[in-house]
Length: 67
Image (tube, rainbow, N blue to C red; front, side):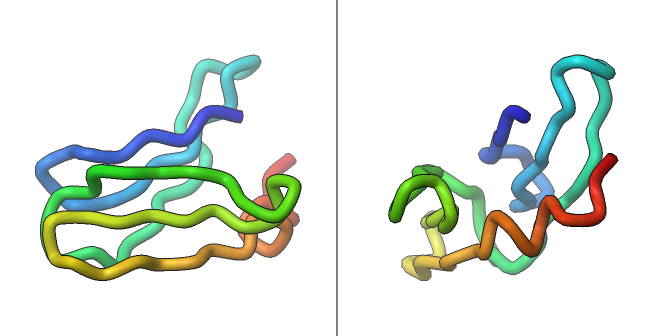
């Protein structure tokens, strides 16, 4: 998996690099995402953006339905 942010739609994208396709979009930021990092042994994805908000995403929950 690859995680990206910073697009014009303020979303975070999760990509399956083996299938070369986007598998999930995370929305919540109201301005561009600037930072993405995994914390707590990769079980939490943290994101921050120009909106001054930090989101904590449960990686296991996000990816449980991705085949």
